[in-house]
Image (cartoon, rainbow over all chains, first blue to last red; front, top):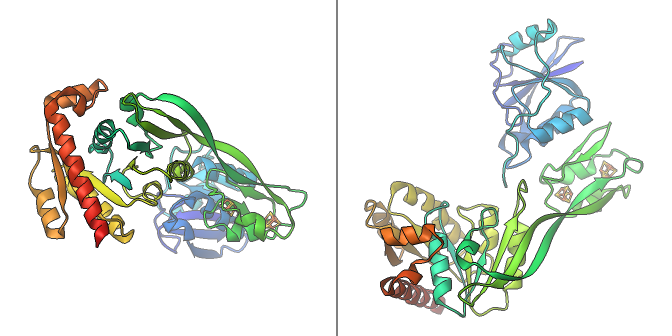
Length: 121
Length: 283
Ligand code: SF4
Ligand code: SF4
C-alpha cells in the first residue's frame, strides 16, 4: 500500500509541510517494501485548483492513504471518490514520526474539510 | 468612449469618483463591473427595468461511456477534472467553461450542464442616466462572464464609465476590455502607492492610457506625488478630504448633490479627464 506525506524534503527525517495542495513534496512510502519515492508537487505553484491537482498526483501514484495537515472541501470530495483515506498529521513533526504514529494507529482520520482550499481566480 | 475607473485596492474611492461623474454627466452610462461587491446601486438607486441571468457551463461525465483514458484531465488547464482508474470527476467550481474536454474525449462521454453564476440588472439611475450592474452569486469564483456581458451590452454606447473591480485580477482585466482610457483612484498613503504600482504596470501592458486621481488629498504624505512624478504620470485631479462629503456618503448621498463647490470640483475633474483622454488618442 502507498502512503503519501506532505513533506518539505525528500527524506524520512524531513519535516512535514503544513499545506496539502501546496506542499513542497509528496513523499510516498510503500508499506510492502519500505521503499520511498519523492515527488515534487506540481500543484505548488498552481493559481487555482491546487487541491485537485494534488489529488490527481496521488491517484497517479496509486496512493491509498494520505497524511495531511488539512484538506479543502473540493479535495476532500475527490479523495473520497477515489478511495484515498486522509489522516491528520498533528502531533508529528517529521515524516518518520508521522509514519510511526500512523502504524500505531494513533493518527486521527480527517473527517471534515478545512475552510481553506478555495483560491479565487 | 469608454473610461474605466479603477484602484489598487477596494475602498480608495473609485465608486465615489465614478458615481459622482455619472451623476453629473447625464449622457454617460455607468456600469458597475465590481461584481463581487457592487455598490454603485446604493448611490444610483436605479429603477430596474431588466434582469438577465448569466450562466456558465460545466462538464458532466457519463460513467457508462467513459473509458478512463484521462485525456480530459490532461487537457484541462484549470485542474477542473480529476481522472483515475476508478472514476472521472469534474469539479464544477474550477471549470472555466472552455469546452475543451468534450472535444478531446474520444468516447463522447462528456456533456455540459448550465448553472447560474450571477445577474445583470439594467435600469435608470435616480439621476435619469442609464445604469447597469452585475452581481456574482455568493461562493462563485469568477465574475468574468458577467463582466464580459456588461461590456457587450454597452458596446454601442457613446460614453461609458466603468466602475472596475479593484486590483489586477482576471475580473479587472475583463472590465478593461475595450476601454479607451483609465483613471486610477488612489490615496496619498504608502499603501495607496504600493497597491497602485501593480495597476500602473497592468495598464501599461494593456496599452491603455491613463491618469491618476488623488482622493482624500491633504490627509496623507507626499509619496503618491513623488511616485507619479518619477513615473511621469499625470494627475487629472485631487479630491480633498471633506467631512461633510464623508457624512453624506454614509447616508447614500453623493458629493455633487450637497454643494455647488463639489459640483464644480467634479466638473473640473471631468473636463481634465476628458481632455487627457482625447489627448492620449491624438498621438
Ligand atoms: S470545459 Fe474546459 S475548463 Fe471546464 S473542465 Fe472542461 S477543459 Fe476544464
Ligand atoms: S476523455 Fe472521456 S473517456 Fe477519457 S477519461 Fe475523460 S471522460 Fe473518460
